[in-house]
Amino acid sequence: MNADLRRPLTAGYGLQKAVASKEIVIVPPRLTPLAEIPIPTLKELEQEYNDENNLDELCDAHNDLIKVIIEKEEELITSHREHIDQVVDIIKTDMSLL
Image 1 (cartoon, rainbow, N blue to C red):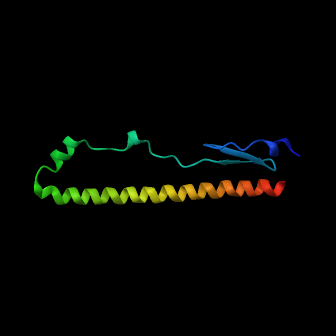
Image 2: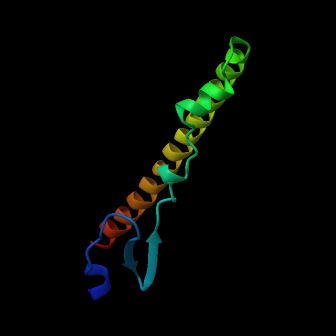
Image 3: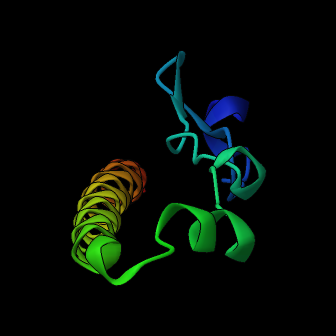
């Protein structure tokens, strides 16, 4: 048996497995670090929405933010499913070689 095919499968970023002299690299998508996401402070929000007329604007902004969070969650779930499918395909290939 080829030594490359006996190499252990390592989990995590840069998951690699040599199959028939082809290197397969699966890299999960890059997530946005929390530090790069703009989060307004309480004072900034109070200044922006300081009267009751702006309460509707605050509700609209909140709803927009919730929509963005749900969309990002859907993207993350889809990406994770694709990653799992790729790993399962590699495992199936390994099992067929045994």
